[in-house]
Length: 94
Image 1: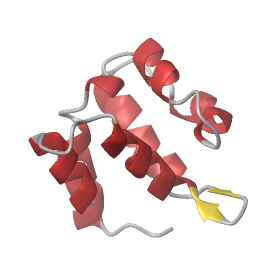
Image 2: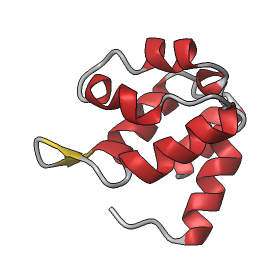
Image 3: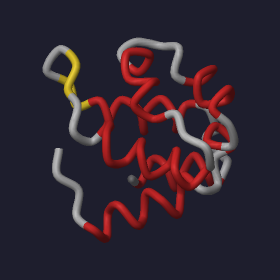
């Protein structure tokens, strides 16, 4: 899945607001579901910014059973927030 530089920047801005990127442990806890769990090693990093960058770069390149992994990742991340939450809306718009 090819993301434009504008789309990548937008994802970075929205993901920066998500607690799941605060640590490798939090990201690991979130990514326990299939197909995401298969790509956890691809996204672990030392800082929040690095984790976000790796998720965007690496997951946007992956497919699992003919599905775009990045789309599944964003959809699952969106589910972590209540529909009335601003972050839910921002993720949904991605």
